[in-house]
Image 1 (cartoon, one colour):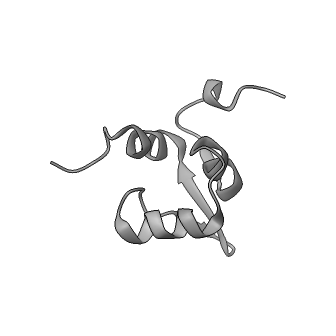
Image 2 (image 1 turned 120 degrees about the horizontal axis):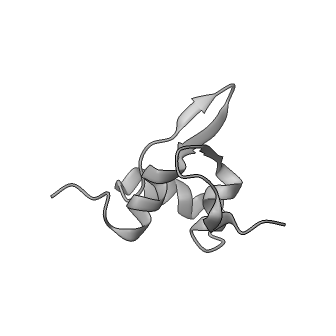
Image 3 (image 1 turned 180 degrees about the vertical axis):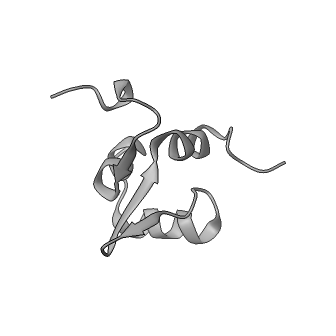
Length: 67
């Protein structure tokens, strides 16, 4: 298995990948973070959530927060 932090930044990640990148959080925590504005809203395609990896990682590191 490849290191998820070594993946290209511009690709889309699934909800499971997002949870793993955030430290193995639960679906409920991910939902709470979305509602609180901690992470960006996902793009929904055919009922599944996807994030741009760069935007998601910026939100986790704090560099994506509005000033």
